Length: 295
Ligand code: GUN
Image 1 (cartoon, protein in one colour):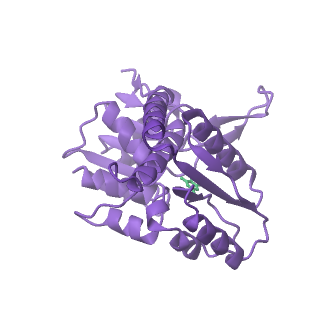
Image 2 (cartoon, rainbow, N blue to C red):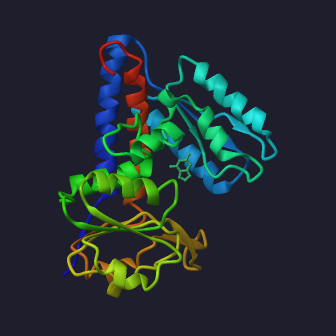
C-alpha cells in the first residue's frame, strides 16, 4: 500500500484564503481589523524564524501585527509588564509569547499574565484547564494540536471509537492533542520516553500522532497497515548535498511508513503550515469576540 499524502500546505492555504475573505468582510462592516502581537524574548534563531513567519502570514491575510522583542536578559517584570500593556491595547486582539522562554523566566507566570480573551495560543491555565475537562469549552485551542485535528477532519478520518496513540507528552503538542482526540471519542494512549516496548504500542494505533522531536524515530514496522500517521516533528539533520547544509525531517521515517500507512503527513508541508493557519484563525476568533454581533 502507498499512503495518501495529506497536503497540509494546500489545506493551510485554503484556510488562509477563507480567513482573508472574512477579515475583508469584517473590515468593510466595522472599519477594524484583527491585531496580533507575537512577543519574542531573546535571540533563539528558530524562534526568530517562527515569529517572522507568523508576521508574514498575518500580512498576507490582512491581520495587523506587531513583534515586540525583549533581550535575552529581560526580567520577569519586564516580560509581564509588556504582556499587560498588550492586554490593554485595543488594536491587539491576540497575544502570543513565543516559547521556549530563556530559562531564568517563569513561563507559567508569563502565560498566566495574558488576558484569557487574547490567549490565541491557548496556553493560559484557564484555557488549557478547560481543554482538559469534559464538557468545558476553552476560548482558544492551541494552534498545532488544532491544526492536527483539522487535518484529520479534512482528510475524512473517523476518530470515534478508534485507537489513537500519541508519541510525546509536551505541553505544546502531546498533551493538548491527546485531550482533543479524547473529546473526539478516540481511545487515547500517550507514550513517552519511559514507555516500554514502544513499537508494540504504536502498532496498535489506527491514528498515530508523532510529536517527540526525534528525527525519523518511527519506522515502517512500528505502524499498523492502514493506519493514519500525523508527523508533528520538525528536525534539522545534516545534509552536505544541500546549500544550507541541512534538511528538515519529521519524527517519522517517511519513505518506510508511507508504504504501510493509508495516509500520512509530509515534513515539511504537513502540520507546520497548519500551525500558522490556526494561529490566524484564533486571532480572527479573538477579534470577533470583541465585535457586537460576531462573537
Ligand atoms: N514554540 C513552539 N511551538 C509554539 C507554539 O505553538 N506557540 C508558542 N508560543 N511557542 C511555540
